[in-house]
Length: 253
Image (tube, rainbow, N blue to C red; front, side, top):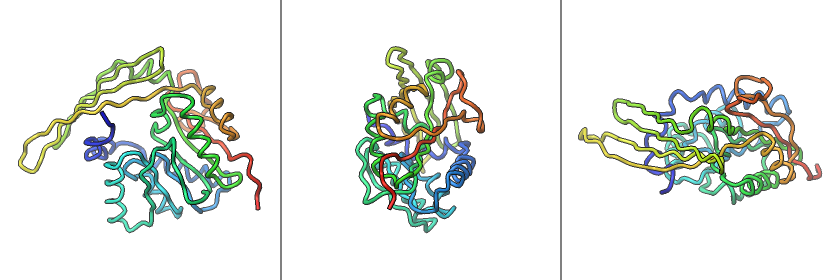
């Protein structure tokens, strides 16, 4: 069962408490700190384009890549309303292709966790390295094995809104470090009737050491990592980790 199909139509409803503005400000501060000019930036796993829009409005020339056509349809509706000049590409992050290089690649909100094998992470990172300008920056986050093992694994989460609701059932597979979550979604139509949809998603938790190994294998230079709660050091109980890496290997013109 493909993920982010029916869920796309209510994704933004249930993500309305997600700190996109905070994430955007953090990304801009990081890009400024590492002297990334406001050129082309790729949002890898852009989803419905909320963060992509914020970065575009901040002055970056944005490209958004996502594997879900339904999510990109929502993103393009936002683009039509806002008038931003964002290029959206329907591509798998493990095989994405660009027309040229970009100054930075960003990927937030668990996108890396949808890659279920370390080989897939390495291949995605290799493509990132290939499409970055010389010395270009890669900023991304990932959920840790601790989060799946101790926080959300084998938990059921439910949320009810006026026009839609969901039940999110988690099942953690310890041996493979994979969290399976089954989504049951109820959406009310214009006649007041509810339709029921189901999707199954799989995410794999990673340790920082695993991610570092993938970055090295892909040819990227690891720069730093920190806990999601500010610029704090990574802890054993960190649930989400932010990583910064640089392109390595290209010669500057």
